[in-house]
Length: 149
Image (cartoon, rainbow, N blue to C red; front, side, top):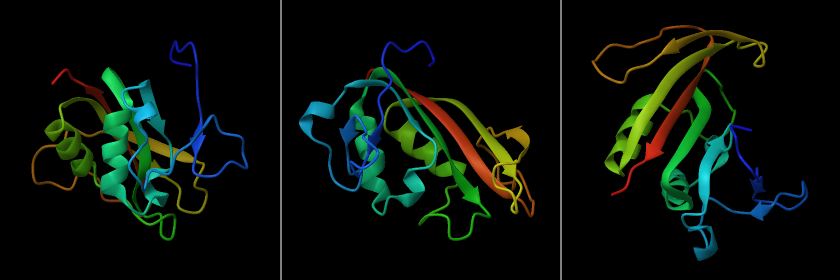
């Protein structure tokens, strides 16, 4: 996957046999600091109560030049997790913490069939306009690279 020699899975519970048990609500253990080249979250962060701690953990777990990839609900996914995320959060948070934004997209999803994807729009993160008005669910895809600070 993405040219990786090893792919690991983590979870807060052991019942699905993850490689690592990590509760993102709590500060990570020292053994996970600067350990990973890529962290991919396709639907975890919206279920984590303490988002600031979870984001800090992601930053700490990545090696320098590491990549974070987030695909999370942005709007319209009522009762799916605790939060929906604005792309602005990721642009501001990661750039303030020494990351270079690589890409950001908004993906429309059918609100009645969440797995049926619709158009994808590139989001550049500037201006005061609402980039997408729709009755559909919207997911945000955001990726950034950890720079040498």
